[in-house]
Length: 224
Image 1 (spheres, rainbow, N blue to C red):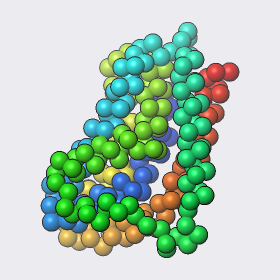
Image 2: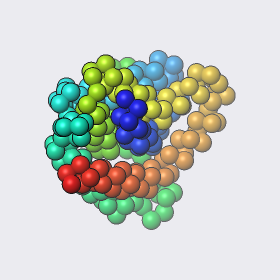
Image 3: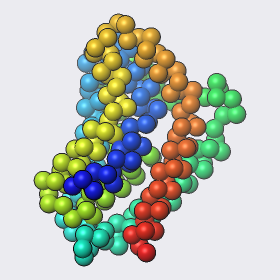
Image 4: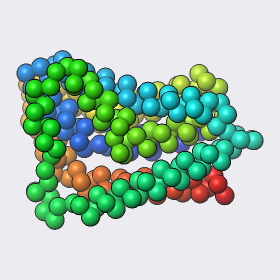
């Protein structure tokens, strides 16, 4: 199990560093219903990652490993494809970055986030985790890595739980600050929000490249 956890730690960290979801939860916490909607967003985020990871474990089962617990060929092919996809997104993100970071713009839906119902907030958390162009491939790759480790089902579930917890730290940190500090958290969270909004495109581009190259290397290593 320790080897499987080591395999997914980097992927989990890549999911945790997600500027837009961090900005989203900070904006949610600043609304009048932040005390309710903030935890709902975090719950949606966790459920999205857990559900996508569980689907991959169900697909791979305990047969994701070939002989001597070496990952099966399909795991290598999947990681290779996901790596190519992330590198492509990284190149596109880098080309589209604003020349002046101060000109970076947030999605228009964020301006209306204070009018989102609790159901929409929960759905937003699900979408930003399980349907995000960076987080979904990384979660799928993590599920494939866990499946390929040749672990019994209880240990697979435990490893997935560790992945989800670490991958959720970026979203849970603002929530924890809000719950502990209350009104005093506004300044701290405001600084986090401004930094994440300013550097979102550059951070995402670098993460796409680095994690894409890691998956490419993993895929080639398995197939070779």
